Image (cartoon, rainbow, N blue to C red; front, side, top):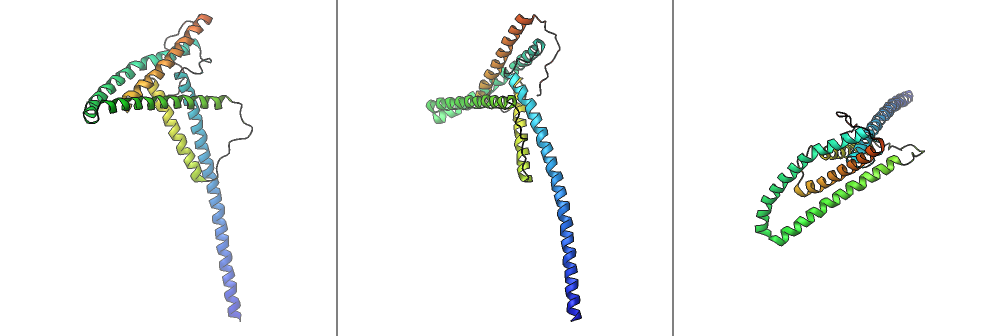
Length: 235
């Protein structure tokens, strides 16, 4: 009888010790999870701020939201766009030569009708991409300028969901960074002829908008250009 009581007692002691260890491990795991979640949220907030700055720069390079720029900043923006155009034109010419060589072979195999249709499809696709870029830019600007919401942004408690959010933000950051670089004639590798052709039209539109804004600012303020002053643009 005493042996049975002793066994039960030891069993309860073992179970109690196990529960205490699990409780301690659970508390440590919870603290670790909370810390990790806060770290993920900080990364997300940092990426969102970087993306915001890139969005503002992209708007200005496309000739949007120029009202808050001084005459000198407008002149700097125009200079940046002007300096990148020769590189973009050179790349477009090179891409056209590469495409022409490729088309000679394709024409022999597929015929002129197929080749002409392919050109139309490629140009239509790149025009659609330009339209999507414009829509994304307008949407981002609309959200940024809209009145702030009272409720704070809600973040997931699922670490996998937070990691997916981080990955998505990194992709968007790189997309905007590359767009801004290409707007000033840099990092053009990988752009085909039709993509470069449509993109050059976007750059020229941004340049035209900046030029018009400069002319209006000069008529209003008669402010001289200060050479060597660069606009604060996140590239």
